[in-house]
Every structure is written in structure tokens, then in C-alpha cells.
Amino acid sequence: MVLSKGFEIEMYTGTPQGDIVGLSDKITADLEGFMREPDSRNVEYVTAPFGNYEKLLCRLLSPRLKLRIYLQKLGDYTLIP
Image (cartoon, rainbow, N blue to C red; front, top):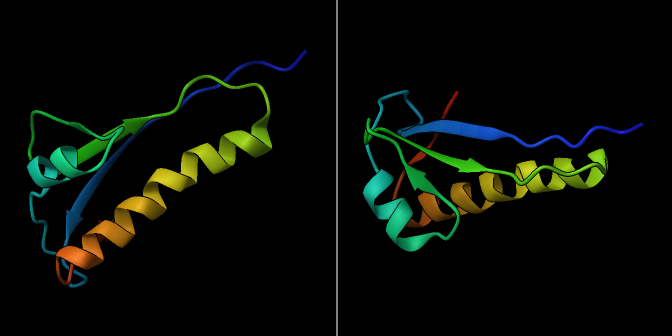
């Protein structure tokens, strides 16, 4: 039996040098599916529960890629590990 899994992913945004820059207001206004956290320095998205783990991996990584592309358009910003 395959269990359905979903994920809640929280990420910080900032500069490639590691300085955290709160961009959650812009991100949530411009990108569908992202939610603001009380701490404006990070943003989150949630994947719906899904039983096909290969497709779930795509659903897990696609918003992250979309966010990286968006951050590059804003300037010299990236995701902070």
C-alpha cells in the first residue's frame, strides 16, 4: 500500500553571500501558491498529498525552481540553505 504524502516547505531568501532579505510580500503578491509566514524573511508552499512519489518529487521541486527564477528577475537574490 502506497501512502499519500504532502510537504510544507519553508525557505529563506537573500543574497548569494548569505544575507537574508525578506521578500515574502513581493513573492506572495506575484507568485501563486506561495504563502507568507509571520517572519517576513521566509516564504512557504505546500504540496497536496499524492501517492505517486515520482510525480510528488516534481510537485516538490517545481515551485522552488519557479521561485529561483523569480528571485533572479528581482536582482541578485537566491534561496538561503
